[in-house]
Image (cartoon, rainbow over all chains, first blue to last red; front, side, top):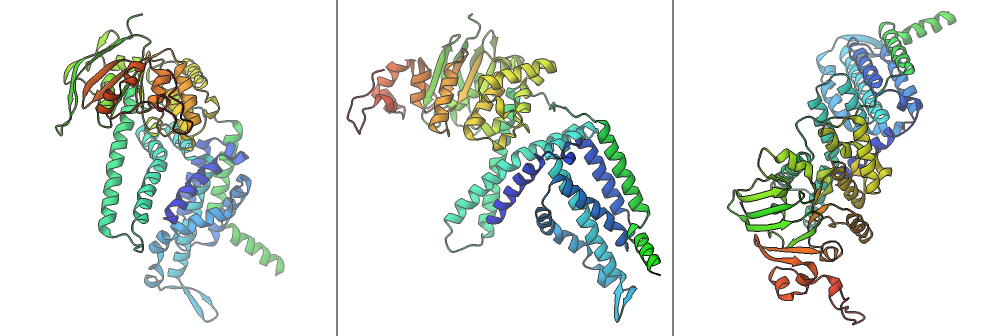
Length: 270
Length: 254
């Protein structure tokens, strides 16, 4: 129960972060969405054995987090929460790909381990980028930005309503969970049968609520389209930021900066 | 003005499972009247209210709102005239921010943006929640949600307000504020409720419903003194009209 509840508060926390007022928060949401998209494309397009060339992207995220006042501990917690998915994706690489790539003393590092690390790094970069996007923009503003960029409105409306009612749904689910926990005494695990009843009950309540919400919309003249207020405007600074970030990403994508730095430093020493 | 009347004649409604929720209800409510609909749980109050804004169309009998009989063709017009306030405000506030929620109705009416802005500001001011404008609805308190829900309806400038349990789940202060707010409105008001003390404050006329039929229809004060009628309809006198158990003083004279 504690887990569900803390997940709920985390969601509100993310929304609180989005209410901040830093240069990053003030950028136009569309610019931030586009920048995030380019960032992700660059990161996922690297070859599967690449690690070092991706590191500057991590540095970029750290700088943005600093500018936007986003606590790293929060981000790390979220990353750990979803990391099992990435680990599952890459866990078999070390076994399948036994080709030796690197010799460290007596240890041989195979291509599998390198690509596994590469997957984890990509995962960390992309998920952090999205979390930072939401924490500096807010979910609703992102939806609005996507509508402006011609995402079909129906998706936007679905997302907006989902985001509005997820709080109500979690509340309702928590209530039912608490009611069950209070009457099940020593037995902590929920039997499958009880679980089925709870979920069924929640579904029925959700259907009822959906009907009432639809009624409320009809009462106010709903005719199938939701008109979302659009107050976005792109300033010169926004375009400058987009161009700057995109340029930086392409440089980081096509030049292996850490390697160049390494060569430069070793060149100085030699 | 006589055209804001609400007239229901011999209305019946049977749900698909066979429950007869409304059986032959008739009444006529005039312009500017404030009427309470009271009755036990499951007496048919909510079903009756759903007819008043066209969510349900009469199976038999007629409903007339203003100059229009309620049919599929007039439903859009009727929804413009009748503002409905739901028992659960969460059902009514479905947009991401308070502003957008209040603007939802006027935008659907096809009003130009400046007019929408005017109406939203006016509605929020009238319900004293102008400061909540940019907040997301899930962060509001119960009383604030109720006030915003009323603003969403006011922004459409309805002539008739229909409310389902407006004071439920409110703390006493929020309840008092709501009663004062509603008391200041000039609209025709139809309020379904169990809060009989609020009825004393707001409604000069009361309709008592029991098992889908009208048990009584008359001045609130007369009805609330009829102990037998109240008992038969699963109600009791408003607390203010009962003797005080602590100081033993008799009930307040109404």
